[in-house]
Every structure is written in C-alpha cells, then in structure tokens.
Length: 606
Image (cartoon, rainbow, N blue to C red):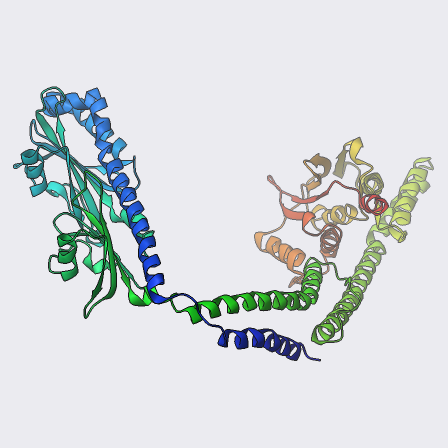
C-alpha cells in the first residue's frame, strides 16, 4: 500500500473527530467580563512600563554627572580652552569620547564652554575641531535651562542635526533621536560653565515601548508635556504634535485611567498613565481596538480553539510517529550515502521494506554493487598496465651498453689476465639479476643503491678517468622500502643524452637524505643540460602524459619513474627535473619516509 494513501487516511481520521467536536462546543464567558479583564491587565502593563521608561531616561541624565568628578575637565570648563589650548583640547576630547562610549545608543554629544565661547561635538566616534559660538543660546532648550534653572531638559524626538554645523552628518544617515540638554555649573557658586547635549537613538526607547503593546490591533503613544509624540506605533507620528486629537483632549480633562472611544478612525478603549517625576507631564497612551479586545471574548471560538488545539497536538503526535516511521529508512539511506561519499562502497542494511523506500533501498544496493565491480575492474586493469610497464622497463637492458661492457671485460681478460675480471662480471651479473627479477616491486633502499652502484662501476671501468661519480646515503635510511628501479633509469639518461655529447670529464652525484617526513633523492650531472623548451616538453610528458614531438622514447625511463611514484604515493610522491647551476641536469625525487608494504602489513595486523 502506497505511503501517500497510508498518510492521507490516517490524517483524515485523526483530524475529523476534533473538527466535529469543535462544532458542537459552547461558550461560558461574556463579552463584558473579557473586556474588564483585558483593561485591567493593560493598566498593569502601562503602570509598569512608565517606570521602565522613567528609569531609562534618568540613567541617561546621570551620564554627564561623571564630568563633575573629573577635576581636569572642570578646570578646563572654568578657565576656558585658550588658557592652555593643547592640554585643554586633549582633556576635552578624552572626556567626550569617554562619555560617548558609555552607551551604544549615544549618537552625538555637543559641548559648549561658556568661557571663550568654544564648542565641540562627537559624532561617529570622531571629535570635531574647536568651533566658535556667537550665541550660546543655540536653541530654545538652552534658554529654558537658564530661565528655569534646571539641571536638564529633554527634547522630544526629532531628526538629528549638527550643532553649530560642527558634525558632518550625511543626509543618508539622518535618524530620529531624543536629546538630553544639561547645564554645567560651578559646584560652589552655581555659575554657568557651559552646556552639554546628548542625542540618544530612538531605538532604545522603541525597545522598551514595544514590550507594552501588540503590533496588531493596538496603538501606542509616548507623549511629551507639550503634546509632541516621542514614540508611537505609527512611525509617521513620531516627532509631530497631536494637539488636535479629540481623544487626547479628553485624556487631559479626565482622571480615569481608561475610557471607551469610537470615531471614524478608531473604535475601542484607551488606557493611559502619566510618567513619574521628573517627567510627570509626559504620558503613555495605549489604544486597544475592539477587534483586538474581543478576539478572545467569543466563547464558542475560545472553546473551539482549546479543543482544536488538543486534537491538533494529538494529531501532531500521531503524525510525528508516522513521520519517524517513514524517515527511519531515509536516515539509513543517508548514512550509507555518506559512507559512499567517503569512499566506503559498502551497504550495511538488508532490506528497507516492501514499499517505495524498500524499492529505493534495493536499487541503491544494486547501484553500489555495480560501482564496486566497475572500480575493481578498473583498478585491476590499471595495476596490470603498470606491471607491464615495469616489466618492459626491467627488460630494457641497453644492447649498446651490454656490448661495450662485455667488450671491456673481454679486453681486460685478454690483455691482463687479472682477477679484476671477476669484479666486472660480478657487477654485470648483479645488474642483470636485479633488473630481470620481476617478483619484487618494492625493495629496501640499500638494494636500489647497490644496483645503481654496480651500474656506475661498470661505466667507470669503461670510461676510466673520463668519469667520476659519488653516492651519499645515511645508514639509517637504507632499510626504507622504495619502488624498484627508480635510480638506474635516471642515471642511464645521463649517459644517453649528457655524457657522450660532452667533451668534459663526466661527473654524477647521488645524494639521499632525510628532510622532515620525506626521503629526498638528488641526482646531478655535469652534462649539457636541456633547453628551456625541451625542459617544458619533459615536464608536460611527466605530469600530463603528453608525448614529445621528437624522440618520444628517449625519456621513457623518467616517465616510468614518475608514474610509479604517483601510483605508489599519489600526491605525496614528487619528481622534479631541471638544469643545474653551472651546467648539467638534475632530477629530484621526494617520497614519504614510511616503508611501503611494511606499513600496510602493520596496519592490517592492527
């Protein structure tokens, strides 16, 4: 049976009963009771919110108080900036920046020093240069501070502006702020020393206010004493005067904290309260629409919601059980797919059932088995090809070299009749035995070194004083397992292309050493080297498998060594070719230090 039909029938049965039950459910609560409860709860919310807003505003008004404890700053305010301009300006900048960084919502700070009529602003973490103020009563609020002898005056929401044109405020960054203007007076005499204004981002007030109302079906207003909207749920009203609102006039005339209201723009209940001192002229007003207030008052809807919720949860629980049952085979498939992604081509489940997931699992297993067969077939073919290449290389004993070597041995035997012939024959037989033994693909480094040493000793006997060679290898490295026939083909290239074409005394040096976690083999000669064009062709042949335009068989030894290093070590194997400084050719081989074969056996034993 299809999963689609199973799930459809089950969900119909589970949801049908709650739907029918909800239709016959009645209600028990009246509209007026719900309304009274709703108003009571919102009065509590407003009462708590007014203290939160008052406390926040008071915390801002306390920020400039720290300046009175700064004796250096107060000296500047008393004596003026010009008294010691460098020190004074530095103190002003430091003090203003300290204030600026006390609260993240501070957008701008303005400081006016009465003595000398100097002014500074801080905006966007930058302190402006000193500015001169022709009229210290820069705005009406400074005048109110003097006339009312107030410590501070709060300017309701307005767009941020540049005091005395000292702040560079981009037009694209104008935002609404609330400004706190403070008078800075001498402590003992009460003499006016200056003003400081702090512009606060309205977002902080918004955060507190948004907790006091719901965005749908409710209106919110924070109104100043002169009927200016400091913050509202209607962003278009922020910073505007609403003297003409009839409901606001009624609030100003009555003492009740709530009343019903209905006109063309709003129908519902207004709840309001005044802020505590020193903001007693400010008030919070909240309008609650009838749709919002009575949305939960309809008893039948209320009971239906409860019942539907119950059966919905029951249905959700039952559906969850079904989903778990359905998702279980999906998880099994995902886990097995992850294994395949990591290269583990194996499946660890027998069957996922007889439905669609079971069919999917069956075909997935079949796919993995086919991939395994294809990969095994491919790697067997690659291994066979590589083995054939190695056998071809091992059987390539240069006839010209063998002829010359035997001729040299024969000449010595006929001319001198000395035991040296035994050494030569031994070296030659060692080379032939090592080259033609196809049972070993990986050998200890010491065997590879002995093989190339035997080869070079025969060449030395042939060319006498025309050839010098050296092999340097640390004893601790001789047991490292390396691929067979990686040294002699590289050395043989020298005699094919570099030695016989040069009139110089031949020199070839082989250095084998340990560098970090690699075995490095450096083979250098003093031959003719190669041209840059030829060098690029060799590199393409090695890395890309591109055959050379000319004499493509001349570097088969190098290419075979490169391919076997790549086969055994992958990206960890390295082969570089290049010209040697001062003339000649060099080949560098780098392979990991672990011993091939031995490392694998130890891993299998573990």
